[in-house]
Amino acid sequence: MSSQGHRIVIVGDSIAGCTAAREVRARGHDGPLTMIGADADGCYAKPPLSKHVLKGEAAEAQTWDLSDLDITSIVDRATTVDTGRRIVTTVDGTDVPYDALIVATGASARRIAGPDRAGETVLRTFADVRALRSKLDEARTAVIVGAGFLGMEIASACASRGIAVTVVDVDPPLKRLLGPFLSDAILARAASASVEFVKADKPVSLTGDPVVGIEVADRVLTADLVVTCAGDVPETSWLDGTGIADGHGVGIDEHCATTVPEVFAAGDVAYSRGTSSRAPFWSNAVAQGKVAAASALGLEPTCAPADDYFWTEILGLSIKVVGPLPLQGDPTVLEGSVEDGSALLQWSHEDGRITIVAFGIKKPVGLLRRLARERAVPTT
Ligand SMILES: Cc1cc2nc3c(=O)[nH]c(=O)nc-3n(C[C@H](O)[C@H](O)[C@H](O)COP(=O)(O)OP(=O)(O)OC[C@H]3O[C@@H](n4cnc5c(N)ncnc54)[C@H](O)[C@@H]3O)c2cc1C
Image 1 (cartoon, helix red, strand yellow):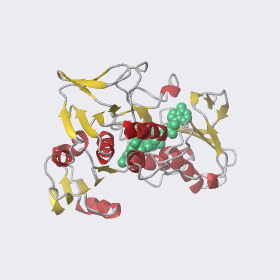
Image 2 (cartoon, helix red, strand yellow):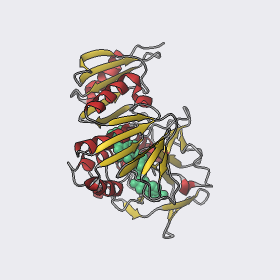
Image 3 (tube, protein in one colour):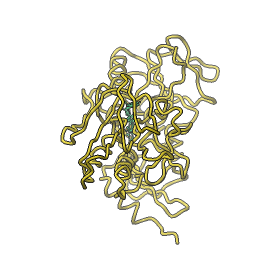
Image 4 (cartoon, protein in one colour):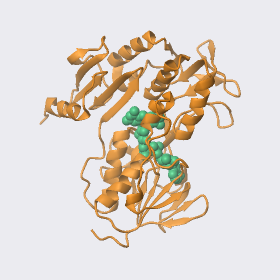
């Protein structure tokens, strides 16, 4: 495909943006391609940050080399878009005109304290990990607010370093995502690794300035380190007033198109206008990056804008999930046993779809995908 005059601009240089860039070239676009990214550490994968990089098993983030793609790379923050004139502007005042724009600015960590309060630690970027790693070197006690996958991964890193760690949440670990059955199994594993879990009856508040602890029910828990893992917020402030984003993020359809002509979006910044939901996971960012790239070129996408594969690693246990979430009720055990920390599990959903979980058992993702597909009950 020759597309000399068609200027594609991608804002955001993480997995959604980089996947889109690679797909733009793979689909034959030989015209101008510009990527604007605000992270001084460049393009890197976030999932290893809270696993191997935080534990010290890997010193550096896993970066990507896009030098073969002939990209004009701008390391700066986009501040606004003029959707009429089709121009993105960056902090230093550079105007970048586009014919098609892909928004891939992801999300930032949700904070509990106000912006003026010092000492609240979060983990989203490689810079955050470097700061947290050096705090872990000094800490003997830690409190983690939030028992989602990120909070439990950070708790695992603390436990592996011998730090006494308490995790606090209104729900048991990963219950909102993985349901009560797996949550109970993770809770049991946490207890055996001396990771304490405290169930809050309402959202906790942070104490001290700088932050030194949390208030939960009538207790105050203090620790050398307090880490907030309370979810993420779509990075849309640069789109204020453009009509591209709303309070949920950037709404997209099955072509990753926004409601603004020639503007597409992918990854954690996006939510499906069909379901009004965000699924801020790696595999979705990859799938949407590919779809947004094809749509920006006026081509048919080669995949769906969603991929329901998710994984995490908690207390030495790898958990891989293929299929719809959240999970309810008890699974069928296909292999092994959850008590032994090695099991292949199946959940059947009312609509005939299947979720397969490899819980601490080594199974290739391809096999999990095949099982989920083959075991689904067709609905006519
Ligand atoms: C520590 C951590 C561990 C994770 N582990 C897992 C896991 O095990 N499994 C899983 O499925 N998912 C995991 N995730 C989620 C997964 O990493 C995200 O879904 C994925 O990174 C989303 O990619 P993205 O490109 O949409 O956004 P992001 O990764 O958030 O990247 C957005 C990029 O846009 C840039 N940007 C933002 N605003 C601007 C602007 N105005 N101008 C220019 N650039 C801008 C940012 O600097 C950033 O580089 C993890 C996330 C984190 C943070």
